[in-house]
Image 1: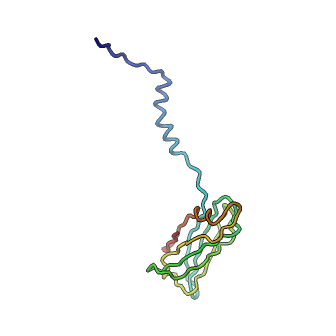
Image 2: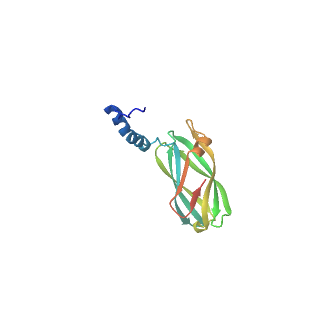
Image 3: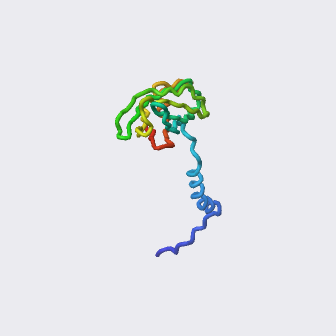
Amino acid sequence: MTRPSLPIRWPAGVLALVALAPMTLQAQDAAPSAAAPSLSVELNDAAPTEGGCRLTFLAENGLGTDLASLSLETVVLSTAGQVEQVTLFDFGDLPAGRPRVRQFDLAGLACDAIGQVLINGVTTCDGAGADPATCISGLALSSRNRIELIG
């Protein structure tokens, strides 16, 4: 002999929790995560100069500590992908959270002949708790013109 099944009666509180669970999970997914420390370098402009090209960078130190000095080893590549120049760009001091503009002149290179600028490494990154490994791991690169900034 089988027993007849009886309807299960759930307390109102359990039903409310079950109904709210999907909304709680969505709210957790939508919560903003803390931004990772970064060192933002943007190739903002490339302008012809007499006998070369001037690259203008916008740098912002989001590492949370002032940098006394920052030097990046850069490789300038032609539009055909050939290495044209290997040089150091000395960005100098970069205070935390403050954007800074830095310009570098490339003698003997026309701007329209440059296809990419490669950040090959960080040679100097001095600040409290900062070193080249910290700076390279936080490096965020972008470009506002046809010349790519890669790294």
